[in-house]
Image (cartoon, rainbow over all chains, first blue to last red; front, top):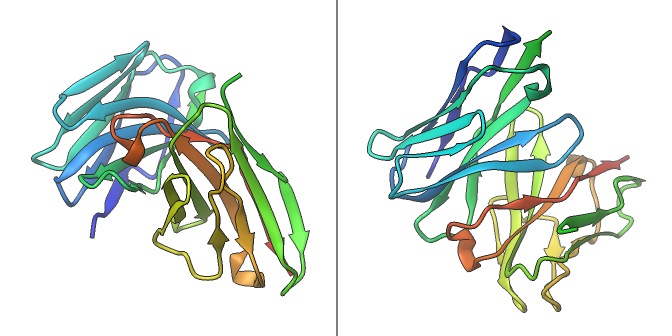
Length: 112
Length: 115
């Protein structure tokens, strides 16, 4: 059964720092991996989707990489801002394409 | 505006009183799904639907029902709610059947309390 973990569980950094969030999954037979952002009391917003054949995706200050064989993905946030404060979740889709399995999330606080 | 709409946002009910949480999307998405989010357990899938009249169980389907009579709507039904169904519920949808390379779009959530 696929399991997804995220490290660290929480992270607090001063504004302007570059940071890396980690996501690991146990079964490498995935179709794609997606990173989400969740603000308190709100739904999840899709940030980046990486297909299994891709190595990375970029959107603005965000860059996500995927190493499928080792079961790892990283989300890189450049020049962090207080508005980046949120919980970041990764999720993988299995090869049947039916269900996302979510990680527990990393709670990020960017201090002014 | 493209969106997934859930109603209600907040709901307090008593054990055993049937309730329905509605979910509607205006993006002509084929795939729709319900999740619950609990502290320490993360997001877990309840039911999903690949298309109209096609539904299937997720990881935690017990105590829930769904239907997909129209493409845009995917209501979640609790026939006899119990306190262990107190949770934050999310509806989500995706363009492609089976989520293939299509981002998942979420509603804003329904916070349900069963006393």
